[in-house]
Length: 331
Image 1 (cartoon, rainbow, N blue to C red):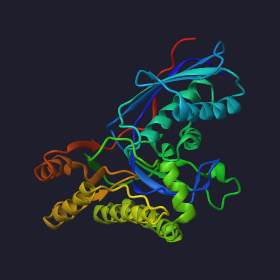
Image 2: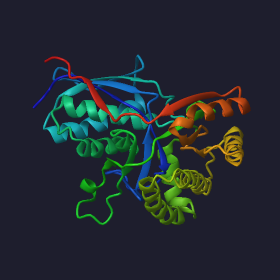
Image 3: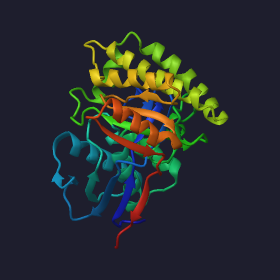
């Protein structure tokens, strides 16, 4: 088995049909499937170096040695990798993350997808996409989708004899799509996605409706993508986002991720549609808004949004690649 350094890069994904709610916290099995677009911006690059001389894992993020929750999550993930690999060697993990952390821009998706890809190679685990997506899922649910590029579905595994094995990500066909991301705030969220997700499952009266409607939305989205129906894809995308945020606002105590500027962006996107531009807004668990459009319309969409929001940072994105190795290092 390999015990060499390995470096991987992964990109965030933005969910078109959202994931929100775990039915199994330990295995990170979702209540519903989800579907996303992996982007070509905000890469995370991670190197994993197993070292038998280490007495504990060491995790450095953007040049800063990590302690507390972030380090504990990486160690818990590597513990799983070591169990699967039959190894006791701790590791040095060095990560450069260009995604604003904890701001609702899928930093954990790219982070754990890169970590899973690098760790699988460094510890000699199977490196096929299905296996690595299942591994990444254990670090962060949405990371399962960032293991693959472009349009990706994450299966919920319900009804399978082995739900763990059946909850993986795979690519799906569809039209060429892109996004413009409006960065409303890069600050860390006051309430983490993990905490808010648990509270939604436990306290929101809208959660059962969210689960039922999302299952149907996912079926409808797959049909729309297969047919190349971008308008239907966009309508489902915007609806899924607003339904998720409605469920979260039903928490007790309530959680509101969307800021006034976020709502203004949703309104502006609706106005652009009325003017004939195919554009649909979505937002993960944070204030930042991503606007979906046809790939060729991204430059026009960015210009139109810049006219309305000259003070916002607007980032053009196209479909991006899945997590991949850059360097296995030397023994």
